[in-house]
Amino acid sequence: MPRNLKSAVDAGTLSAPRYYEGESEIIGDVRINNKLYTYRTELGLVIGSTASVMFVLDQPAKEVWPYFKDFNLWQPNHYYTGVVGDMEGKSFGIGDYPDISNVAHIYQVVRVIPEYLIAINQPVPEKVSDTGLPGVGGVSPGFHVFTLHEHGGKTEVAIVMQHASYAARADEASDEQGLASWRDPKMLPEWTRKWRDDFIPELRQAVRERR
Image (tube, rainbow, N blue to C red; front, side, top):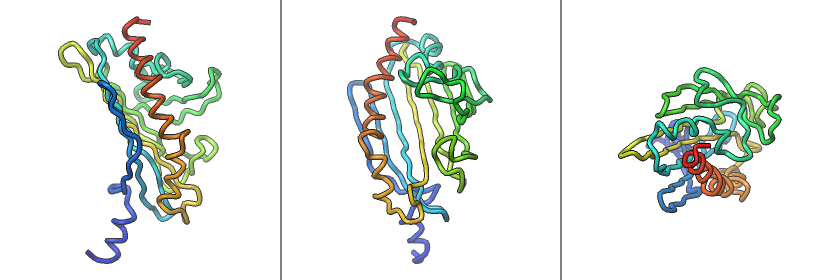
């Protein structure tokens, strides 16, 4: 392999990032896996995570969908500016507090197939202040796909979420330095706990009790 090509492969690219193990759990029918990744652009090191979450609900998709499509019903302490599953072609924002009147709409609902799919894109930010991420270099902060798969009257939920940003001091950071912030207990471990202990149980209860 030519030396310059080997160097590019070792460094990772957008289409072939370097993957690192993140958080992984299997508890009953709940399966959560998160891999970290890095690649480099002319501006420096990009770091991110690609996560998958899978679990089964005991109800058919037509009963799950009215609750699943409205993230406000099952994601505690996350406040969305609309019902995401009703917003194909529109944008929305997320806040940490109930007053979300001034939250920036940084998410775009790309496609909705009722009872099957919600696909969400986060375009490259135009302003650093909107997201805390550099608005340069063609790096999208994320892309997320939420799907329902009905079999035998039950519904398997399968979710893939990807997030990315430039590392602090991206032009100088090593992979391990860049990944350290994602491995912080407030990041990946908390993200895993939130899905396991909060989001999934809340969705199960909402569908079961039809609330």
